Amino acid sequence: MRCAIDYWPKFATYAKYIMDKEKENTMTSTTDLNMVNAYIPGRANVAPATAALIERRDALLGPAYRLMYEHPLHIVRGEGAWLIDPEGHRYLDIYNNVASLGHCHPAVTEAICRQVKTLATNTRYLHDTILELAERLLSTVPETELAHLMLTCTGSEANDVAYRIAQVRTGGTGVIVTETAYHGFTDAVSKFSPSLGVTVDLGAHVRLVPAPRLYHADGADISERFTRDVEAAIADLKRHGIKPAALIVDSVFTSDGILPEPTGLLRGAVDAIKRAGGLFIADEVQPGFGRTGEHMWGFQRHGVVPDIVTMGKPMGNGQPVAGLLATADALAEFGKNSRYFNTFAGNAVSCAAALAVLDTIEQEGLVQHAATVGKILRDGISELANRHEAIGDVRGVGMFVGVELVADRASRVPDRELTTRVVNRMRDNGVLLSACAMGHNVLKIRPPLVLTAEQAGIVIETLDEALSAVRSEKRG
Image 1 (cartoon, rainbow, N blue to C red):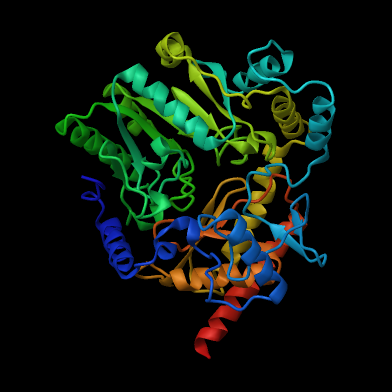
Image 2: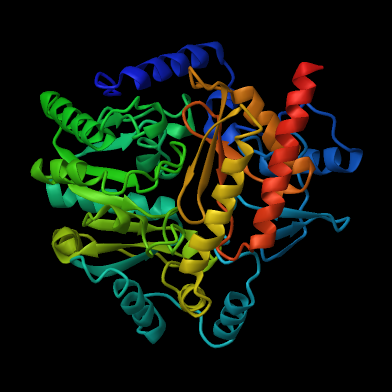
């Protein structure tokens, strides 16, 4: 059992449609979510200077890297929510959550410069900055038993270490994730990151469950259904002699299509994995650091208590700093028997950057700001649905908005082609975003926390124009 869809009448129809479409797609570029809206050589004309730069890049970096958009961007500078190309054209970046405070935020850049001129060393020496960072982060989760901070350089590393801890703590290897989840690129974590595409094999110890898609649930109680799917996955692991180690969930189900509702939907599933002896890992790489506009962490809106919380590079506004918070119980045996050391993780410069991010979120009231401007975005896009039949659903929380584009509102069939054309049209008109979800048909809007109301208006206007233009092209 890879995907427990037996309980989902509407979802089963949706899933069958997606699986049929995937059978038609033979190229990696059409099955890998990281390749949606990508530049594919030979499919679009690019300017000679851009073509030369791409050729040079391919020669030097090899074939594994990808570029976004049909016409790739050459970016030379960043400023707040803007990215700027060599000709001075400005692009509103509403996709890159790594720069959580916006590009080149002065508080972070000044903290990095100040610290790098003073001390840049690792965790084998005592320094106060890492301890202050740990105290500050742990103070954001007072309702939990989370007690320790471990630092890494990336979210992939954080999830890799979290999985190692779960294996040691439980004696198991089984992992349960949603069917379009992304949790990282390491060898261990890529085995439970199905959004990487069909060329990256899932592990035999991995079970997939449907994400709680309210839009496709046909009135069903999705909290109950998600719980039952996780219970079914646990039973299947045990039936095959695999002891469950962890349920790992992005608490807003970002790669599954941005699915924030209903609040509390994780409770039953978390209870189920803990009854089975496994750990609950809250992957906060995308929902964390105030992005939901409600709390510091996405899991807090569901009233659950994780054993481990993982964080990514938004922690340092793009500086290579990430990590995890863990309970004393989860970490005890791992810490006793395993030596953890990461030369760069926890260095004083990265810790200073992370502290500057926490200071800025607090001083500028960015959690509330995310709620206020996020609502402007959602309300404005919802209003567009009155004029554009292709908008099937608008959902989100804080600085997260998902816009599901469909070929038909009655059947809710995903319109992947339309989505790709809209994304590229918006890029041409100066707004950068991408797509996600099983059907590759949900516009993924994930701007910096500092996005202004005026900039939200630009997003709404540009989306309106893109939908109108693509509709006219289809009619023509």
